[in-house]
Image (cartoon, rainbow over all chains, first blue to last red):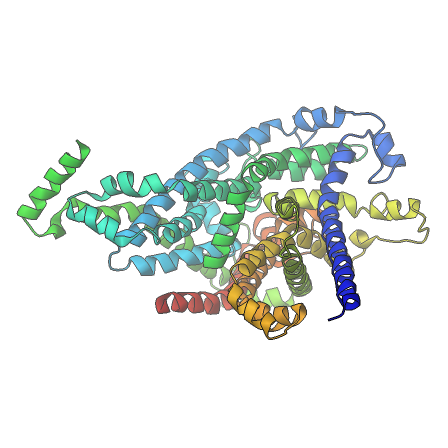
Length: 293
Length: 309
């Protein structure tokens, strides 16, 4: 190959690489833009929103919309902002994540290392629970919660999230525990170690990564849930997503987009923080649930 | 000490009776029991219950006057349901195609030893961490017919630019597609990027030694070996599409009129706010049928594949 030809291919390569970077950065801008617009809008006052455009900068940093969204905006008939519902969501999420993760760990341990007749059938049956459209269980669940006397309560919502979350947590832990050598557990059993001893001493110490993945997955799922929240919560127990939707659809007088956007960011903040701090585990949960599911 | 106690305990069972009678052997079943009961009742029992309701004339409260397939007949005579179904077809089809296209493209681009790959990947994927309600709220503002993107383009000098899909009954379903693609395409990218990293590099080297260019290598060698990833992505995306409820609630609330309803919104409206439990149950069963039609072949091939391993 002559020198000229070589130089041509290398300039072509360079041009292609520059085009590649431009394409990637342009797409990054597209993904970032909606969040940037939300942030900018939340910092403007109503007049600036009316006269400016989506990407025009606010004249000064103005956190009025934020404080109104947090503690003063109307979500339906009440005007206490997002704060009470933000804490409602935590009250639902924390126990629901803890219980479903614990159950998932134990189930996964049984399915992978204490197989019994029917445990595989059970696992397959549970997998279906990962995928059913929840519309198919809404009506009976509403009746059941009524009978149990926990309709419209946080307890009821925690129960619903645990029941339909366990399918996923079991799947995660089962796939992870499959990779622990069966000989290890068998040897411990021959040594006389019991079910829980093996769990505490052998299984649990190596489970940290899968626990992190599961907790993050469940936290994101339950925090972002809207369907169960809107179907099964009462006025005082609404999760933050339901409150946000009510806030946006309540309009006394003019529409305050700055307050809407501040409220939306508040509702998104916990899962975004988790994603930024532990994105690696979040992605692992997504792909594990997807590829193996 | 713990160890000794455990040894002593099981030593006794070994010396005495067959292990079948020991508590340890019941333990797995006892541990699984709560989940098993919950799954049987709350997944399968409730499915059957909903199926039963769909054959009754229940309105505000469940009743058990059976009316055969009347609710299904009413359902498929109902214009709002037919709109919801055809919306699902348009929304689901475009959502899946665009997500797959963008996901594959971005994954291939990112797989070229890009500097700051981690940061770019993080940006592509962050929408997946937030709720569809937040996504809907954000896009409702971006797509606002007077103050949103339209106004921005006019200020930039495109005087005739019109972008009012959100208030146009014929176009509003594409607004759902835009917002949903923004949220989920990064996830497809992550799936394919993981797949690309798993492709045997020997195979690629061999192809390149044979003189295959980069495009041929991707088209002939790399992408065909990612067939399982395509399959999973397809199942997950269609699953997201069929279950979509929150996005419609936040972005369009089904409007204008009911032009942007999806089946999940139809079901919720009839079962919970319009006192048409029978009709709502029937629509839920149709949704279940759609999911099973996609899922059963997938799970079957997955489980069979596992047995072969």
